[in-house]
Amino acid sequence: MKASSPKSYRLHGLTKRCLGPNYDVHGWQPRLLSAAEATFDFRTLTVKALRPSLFEIRNHYSPAASVAKNTTQLVAFGVNSPDIDKEPIGFLLASIAHNTNEEDSQWESGLSILSLAVKKPWRRQAVASSLLEASIQFANSNGLTGCCIDQPTTTDFASALENLFSEEKGWRLSSESVIFTLDCSTSGIIELQKRFQLASLHQQRQWGWHVEQYPSVLTPALKSRLLDPNIPKWARPIDLRQFPESDQVSPKHCRILRVENDVVGWLIAYHAGEDLIRYGTIWVDHLWQKRGGLVALLTDAVQAAHYPEVYSGSIDLTSSFKYKRGCCTYARENIAMRKFSEKHFRPVSAHWVEIARKTLRLKA
Ligand SMILES: CC(C)(COP(=O)(O)OP(=O)(O)OC[C@H]1O[C@@H](n2cnc3c(N)ncnc32)[C@H](O)[C@@H]1OP(=O)(O)O)[C@@H](O)C(=O)NCCC(=O)NCCS
Image (cartoon, rainbow, N blue to C red; front, side, top):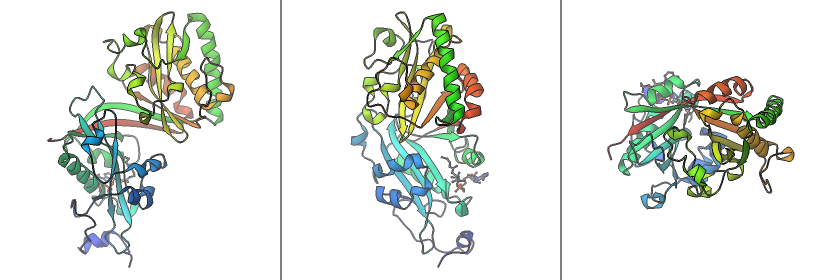
């Protein structure tokens, strides 16, 4: 028999069936899910972009398997309703990874929460809190040294998330960023891209820079920038050889900005989903800002990724994929990118979300 209201279970103190041996938090029994349970029963409790990865979920953590640098393992926790239907009502998806954020030296291997959701009728009854606590207990008992989440701060659920990941509960703010998504089939973006291309051509003639493919092996010019103290850590270039295929860097869409023999800027792009590319780090040296370099890097990569049929740059796009959507993240402290994006991209963006990266140090 189905409950008329989920609350009635709590009010009348009905005994919930224990669905798993692992956890009992706030009166709920969140449990580790298998890939099959997550894929077939809980999939609607996470966003579409993450659903293909549910197949990769493990119902245990194997430290040996993640020792190899940059490998991640997915784990998921679920809560079912206490009624006879045992309907899936809450879901938390996380990956276990080695920390690659040099600015956050608090943890070496940690649990990164990718998504957390509770079905509407069951909200505000500590289901999310129980899932979160179960994941923290899991991390602690597996010797992980931290947890982190990229917490959206401008959505309808911002205050709930602020409570879940609050300072009183030990979470610390480690960085702030913005993420926005563009649907490149819309007329607004097509027009913007055309304007950027014209502006780039004009600026290139004036300043003499070139946009080229990011080298697969770091050149001495780029290598010297890896530890350049004038470049913030989040903006530093990367060595593509250190990123295996699973890390989804998309070399065909990574760019450098060159002036004679100097590299003065770069853009690093990642395959982020079926039809989605993410423009991650975008950096132009201060001296070369306001000279069209940022627009040139983006325009070339965007044209290759979304409009390869009219691509006019210097990169070989043989067997290149055409992406429908692009998203871009940038650190809030990246003032140049912030001003630029607010002015040009925000009015035509499909989604615009501000993110606070929160971290929790564990006892291990
Ligand atoms: C955010 C969400 C997961 C919270 O789930 P929940 O089960 O209702 O959360 P809980 O009942 O455990 O509440 C956690 C805290 O947030 C507070 N809270 C919950 N909903 C709230 C709301 N709408 N407004 C203000 N505070 C709220 C609770 O009072 C509690 O505070 P406390 O820890 O100080 O007691 C749920 O609202 C949801 O699924 N939202 C849609 C998906 C989403 O935005 N996910 C986050 C992206 S990763």
